Picture 1 (cartoon, rainbow, N blue to C red):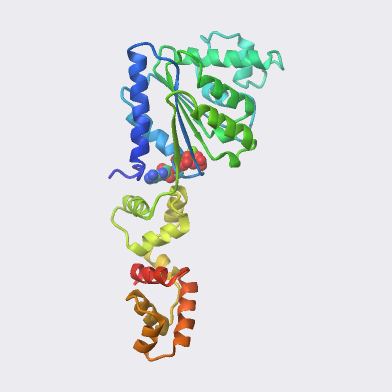
Picture 2: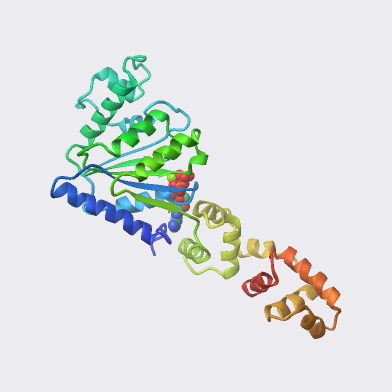
Length: 320
Ligand SMILES: Nc1ncnc2c1ncn2[C@@H]1O[C@H](COP(=O)(O)OP(=O)(O)OP(=O)(O)O)[C@@H](O)[C@H]1O
Ligand SMILES: [Mg+2]
């Protein structure tokens, strides 16, 4: 596998790429209705941007134009998404007045408050239409949750604007990560409710997927205790997993040093648990009192951070 390949997101990637092909068909063939939306939510570091990048790579035919913008969190200003899109772009031919363009592009010398909000919104849509042209294009809106209200409004508008030959791709952390959670929640609902919209929520990776990511990065299969340590440190979040890996977390010495110190007796009790014995059987097998076994078991649960004897037994199988 190529390092950096998406692990465990085949279904999402497939659905995402399909959204483009069907849109491409509509755009290339009969008249199309309007943009189609792919709305992706998930916690920070879960792989939203990586999924978008992988999907764009796989789009066939390739889009003729990709307009990509993200919230520039340190300069929150109206129409931040569009300003980000316009950065470094040739804007001379755009069919909107220069002063409006200066405003939308957030030029420092833009005139103050010349345009009513409704008029600016229409001009912003006109700019996007002109940039997409006959398409088919992709509009990428990264981190919707961090965008300003004017941008949220614009994105909501673009999702329903007729005859825009584009796929609208939006990523967002859950609304509770936003400055105005209600507005973001409403925008996400609005986008997800447009015809043909694809809605995806990315959750954490499972142990098998974590094992694959680690093997992929390390270049060989990694031991089960390394996978367990990776799970423990990342909760299946790819960003946190890679950070842990980069910090040397998967090195054998680190993982071993992290294992709890168990006494010789505790190890004996643990192997009895792994064989499925009851406390009474353990007591008989080791020649100690049931009461002592109970104490060992409760220490084992604490040290291995298990909530039950079964879990402790599984822990033993994984680590010894
Ligand atoms: N499924 C996966 N398989 C392998 N690597 C992944 C996977 N998902 C994410 N990654 C890697 O994890 C890191 C974080 O992913 P990414 O930047 O896409 O997260 P995000 O959801 O966009 O986070 P944020 O909300 O902070 O922008 C990247 O280095 C990415 O390549
Ligand atoms: Mg991202």
